[in-house]
Length: 308
Image 1 (cartoon, rainbow, N blue to C red):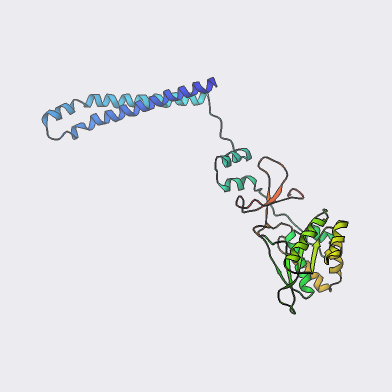
Image 2: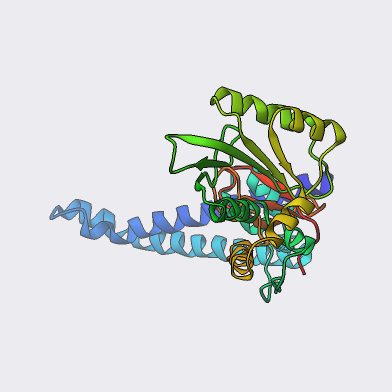
């Protein structure tokens, strides 16, 4: 603290030297050019001509003060060099954000640089590995294609609030939807009775008696019983693979093409409908998937593994 105060006093003294030097230089220049400003009056010309010597002296004094300022400051910086500028790492970037830095600063902070794109090898046949490899939006697209192959006209919503319905099923023999489907791309966690009961509420609100709940996971015993009692077709991962296995080879390949379309491994933002990006927390921690529209959209999903 004492050293800091001493440095501030020294800096103020040097600034005064500099200010005085510029004042003397300006005053001297005014004296030197005064003969050209006094007009035709002999008396004023005589007075102005006598200011030449004081003018040169003032300029010399000002130059000396400026030179002294430069020498003293250079010695001070040599004796006590300032702290070198730190590279803009995560901590400094985080401080800029707190002070109101732009979104780009934050994006550079948490957007990793990959020397090469990650490689992914699509599966060549249907198995549980397919469901493990694809993201939730690809799973919904597969389910939609399954219904389409069964003869339904389908209508889905890629993002935004869906009201509990992922796919509307229409028949050419009826007006309006004849059934709805909900898709859950869950890993490990079973679908409970709460989720199935909410789905029944959506069906009832639309006056529908048919519905399919599809998941890559499983169902709890209560959820299966509730679905059975209320006319809901509960398809788990194994049942879906069995259903797909009954399709023709061409249809199975068609479903595989849908599953592995584009960046099938990269999750989609449920709010914006765009692919999420790999993110690392500013203060360290587990990597996650974050929306590219951050901070407007703060959607995020956990990442199963750290990017290579």
